[in-house]
Length: 214
Image (tube, rainbow, N blue to C red; front, top):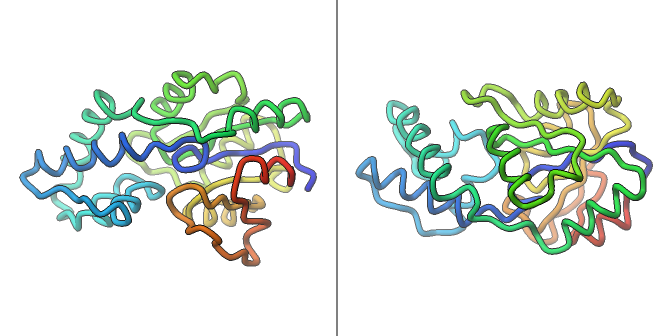
């Protein structure tokens, strides 16, 4: 594989952000007078989609409560959850090795862009990335929109970039942006041993395996 740019998803790809996300989501619904969710499989659906869809997928929240839920969640996550996370083992080493190989590196996430930048900075990963792009406050951007912003930032053609992510939303966004896609199965979306299909270049099981491909 010969790419100039590697674009990484954040949640479930670069970092295990689940502790902060799950706790913040449950705290939010409890403030709305609803019971929390303790099934990790169900809670994992909160990671990947735009936040406007998450409360429906996980809690079957009424549409009339979505705006209030998002507002409460953002306050809770910003106060208690955002740094309750950890880069996956091997990620800093992977990023360092790719930079030494001459790669441009970027983050393309459906997480709110300012929050993504704060987290990347907090965990001392900011020095690796040439572009960090995320969602707007109203979550109107698709994954493809965000990938295209990265491509514009760095003046890279789609064929010269690869998106790396752990969910169907990453896979779909890569397809819509005409960017090749590599799936990782250490995150929240794809199960261990997820099969490769015609829209996936490869399924990798560790940062070390990813480095060997790139």
